[in-house]
Image 1 (cartoon, helix red, strand yellow):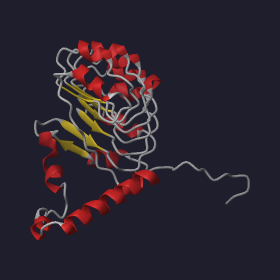
Image 2 (tube, one colour):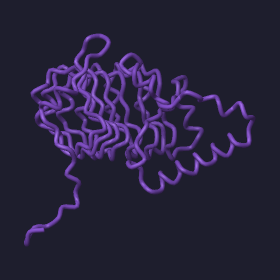
Image 3 (tube, helix red, strand yellow):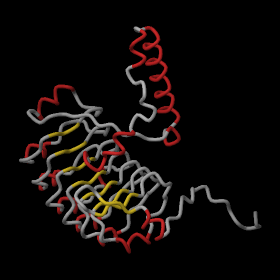
Image 4 (cartoon, rainbow, N blue to C red):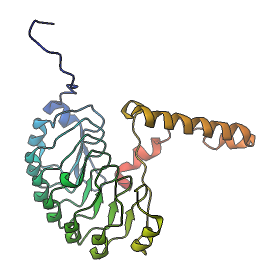
Length: 255
């Protein structure tokens, strides 16, 4: 190492070129342009994709992003934005200028209450909002302005009570409040809204030590139960070499 230079402790991440981004372009089943840059170890928002800002859907999930720039508002056609499983602690105010957005996934980041800008309520067409697996203790009451919201994920946060603003969302169909430190009886306040559970698949290398150990313990318990059970139970998943192979092939449809 050259004298005077310090070794950075921050991972550089993978550099995305315009050529790579163009190869990551896909078409959805309804003919919309879908840019998929998921799980590519990207630590900095790739400026080159601003040249592809006419895409309809953008997937930057499962990366190492800590910041989304204000230039995100260049993607004026975006209807679907997936940023789940990054390291974001705030969302830029410019997010409110994505007027065509109907689905926003911010699950599994580091967002607190102050990390959610008030401008998010400007997304008048928003139908799906996932804020699960973050660290907010409250949800901004201004979310009640999202009158078209149908599905809301608030699971695995630090909420101590059911947000009152949910009562002012006329079209809300499902809300997930599981794994929050709130009294169980508080769940009654959201009926008849359906409570749902969500599943996100991540690589083991992305898990912290305690979470990884929990996964291993659960796996051992499941294996133990299968060994004790009838022989035919072991063949239930025979042939499923890649558990999500069908899902991956059909994800454009069910998404």
